[in-house]
Length: 249
Ligand SMILES: [Ca+2]
Ligand SMILES: [Ca+2]
Ligand SMILES: [Ca+2]
Image (cartoon, rainbow, N blue to C red):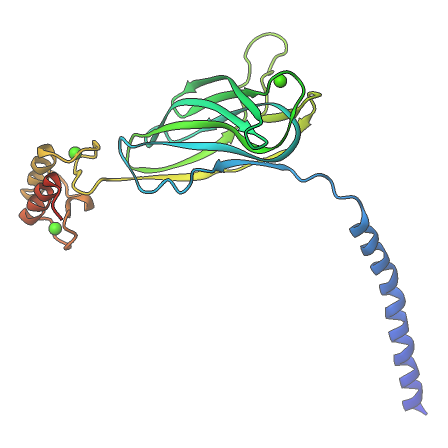
């Protein structure tokens, strides 16, 4: 009897749990059926990656790419980078919609070392639909190390109204309405050329003299000085530098 009662209780309990689950499932289905807001437009670095191994004095370009967008018209953003590792030389025009829509760089200026501000626009106010590049950035590798490349807000306008006015990094459509975007980052590593002991981008006799100073302990040793990668820094590395200069393996 007790056992039977217990079974009934279990059944009632199960029904109760199902009854609780139903509204939960209904609300879940409701949430899933709500219209999904338009995804943020991704703006990032790419198109010409991988750029391969970079050494000091190498030049390279990276596109600022934009995902699919409707009626894009204009944009503004800062590009930030490690000035000890990279230099921006220029910023050139982009194109959207498979080359059908020109994107003009209205202005691109270095604010300070490590920050450029870029303003882009498409002709008229008709807007361009599609994906592509906002601009192409031309770099020179200046020093060994890692540089993050990122997008940032513009410097605050110090002048009278609109005060604080230049504002955020942004893109907008052909009505001037902001298009929400996600802004990507990229890390660029500049490596030391094998044999380039002093890190000036070329391998020559100056590097041999620099290596000599390390061997006699006038200067602290650096890992780059082990040119033949045998774990020792000695006169065999001088020979290796000479072979590099001669183009020998
Ligand atoms: Ca325009
Ligand atoms: Ca050198
Ligand atoms: Ca060595």
